[in-house]
Image: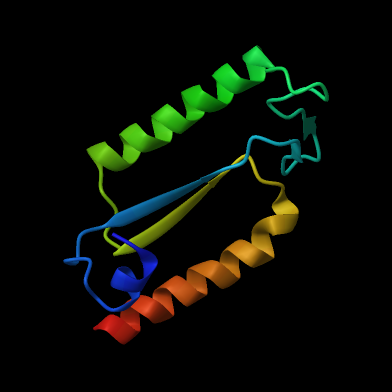
Length: 102
């Protein structure tokens, strides 16, 4: 299924969860900087990668166990709070898209 199909109401009204996964460095809401999953020489930071995969797995399981009521849900993992305004704007666009379908 592509974005065009969703925007045209062809999703069958099944919940769709999009998980945005950031492998790069970010700072959390407490301004603590977390290193990215890859070092400058492109080798894997295994402990950070394993942590993020664990969180990703938990989020996927959460949505499997309890599907959202919204038709489209976007979850952001490991993004800095400075992206919050962009996230709110995207959520508003998603809401408008769903309203337009109905």
